[in-house]
Each structure stands twice: as C-alpha cells, then as structure tokens.
Length: 121
Image 1 (cartoon, helix red, strand yellow):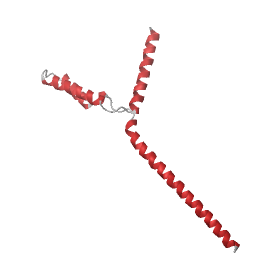
Image 2 (cartoon, one colour; image 1 turned 180 degrees about the vertical axis):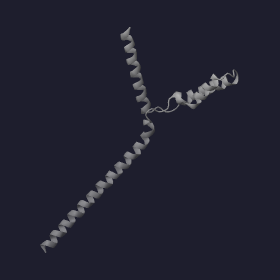
Image 3 (cartoon, one colour; image 1 turned 180 degrees about the horizontal axis):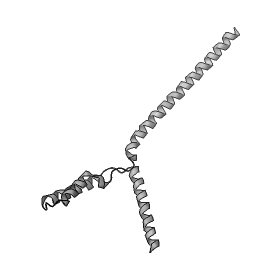
Image 4 (cartoon, one colour; image 1 turned 120 degrees about the horizontal axis):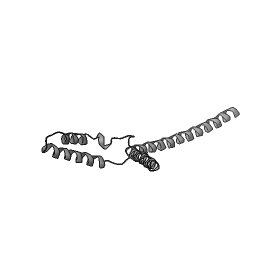
C-alpha cells in the first residue's frame, strides 16, 4: 500500500507542478500579446531609415521640370504650384525617430564642417 500512496503523492505533485507551469505559460502569453500590441503602435513612430526627402518628391521634380521648360506663362505657374504642393506634402508628414536620427547626424556633420572651416581661417 505504501507504493500506491507514494505514487498518488507523486502524481499530485506532478499535477500541481503542471498546473503551475500552465499558469506561467498563460501569463507569459498575455505579456507577449501586450508586447506585440505595443510594438505595432510604435512602428509608425519609428519610421524607416533614410526615408524619402524633399528631393525625392515627384511633385517637386515635376514642378521644377515645368519651370525649366521654355513655356513662360502656364508652365511657370503650374510648376510653382507643384513645387509648393510637394513642399507642403513633405512638411505635413509625421515626424519619426528615423527622421530625428537623420537630422541629428546631418547637424553634427554641418557643425564639424563649420568647425573645420573656422580652424582653417
């Protein structure tokens, strides 16, 4: 009978351990779901590295092409409007972390170039 009691005790311990393990897995699953949800909301704020700049805007390029062609009346007006629309479109997009990083690096390069110019003079 002792062996049966021992087996029963071991089975209860195993069952308790399995229940605890199951609860831990459920908690981990919930945490992982929350992490995925937060990551999805942050993704648009992070942005893409090297995202399009103003010179890549097709509106600006088309506007400059119209201004460059020799039709003096309509193409200048339409070209200027396209350039303005491209600038407005570029300025109204949301700022992302990638933009901030790019601007920071660009500013540091400009400061280094200015410092180099000052030292040379």
